[in-house]
Length: 412
Ligand code: PMP
Image (tube, rainbow, N blue to C red):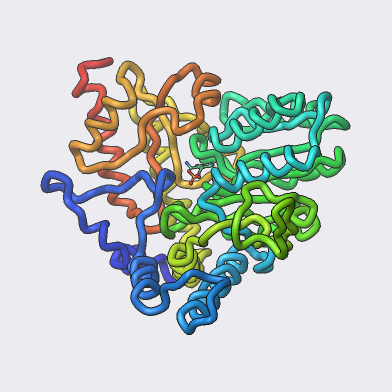
């Protein structure tokens, strides 16, 4: 097989030509939001220039055109995760999808006092706070699967924890801090033997792994468009037919009903039941362009490229004195995302120093305060690569990191 043509991929991203104070931008913050290839920028603009109209209503030419493009986009994005179109609900992002699921389960009265919701210690707040709120409102108890020192989940505790009281098991496919691919099959098996619903946060796996959500065995999953080369303000909730069918609407309004009287309303089946209001049509069309563009790459070669970046980044960081990696393990599959602490230097100072070298990383708690607390930190630095990242960029990053402690006069 041919090596992955990273130069050709880079040429698709106009923003990668940016210079930061005369240095080439090294964008290592794709886990926060991905950059957008031309195909996506063009698709959104094309739609707005040629087909823009509100969908599912209006008898005019443009409305029909827009509706067709919108529903085609649904089929394309569903296909990207191995699903059928009617199983894919548009949301404004993963956060909205998770709130939809937790809120709908609450409305349905599916949780009561004595029931348990199980999450992990490695959640993004988006897959934690909606469950905290649901627990607080229903009297259910929120429990968590701890992580080992190497960042992997403690499956022995998970086995003890998940049982007859468990109604929901929610977990990240890939943690946005640790970069570790969690054992989906094992967690699904535990949840299924307890009769619990499984909810997968696929935000950080979708940009890196080929997903077949129905095959994973989970019941519901969410992801965000802006992290998979698509636009902001769109994402998706995927659910099994029978699981979505059994969920009542969460947010309500126009476009999701069959008949309405002044007293009550009857609702459309999924996915429209969960899509009230005017839809994010240009965003859906552009997200479809994103997954079409991404899906057309040689994904095996792209994966090998990213695996090489991951090794280079982790091994390079390991060899720098005073660096502590979060989720440093060879015992699990990983994506090219690495959080770390520089002993004696605040993460924000590290970020600023790297920025002065043109290197863009994320600093802070990455919306995962409990996980940082678990490691005795309040903040860390996170570098996250994408398919357009080169080995030279990783080396620029490593070179900059190796100068941090000397610059701040620490540990010399
Ligand atoms: N879960 C994970 C693992 C994430 O990384 C993020 C985004 N940082 C989210 C959920 C929330 O996604 P969004 O902000 O796009 O709704």
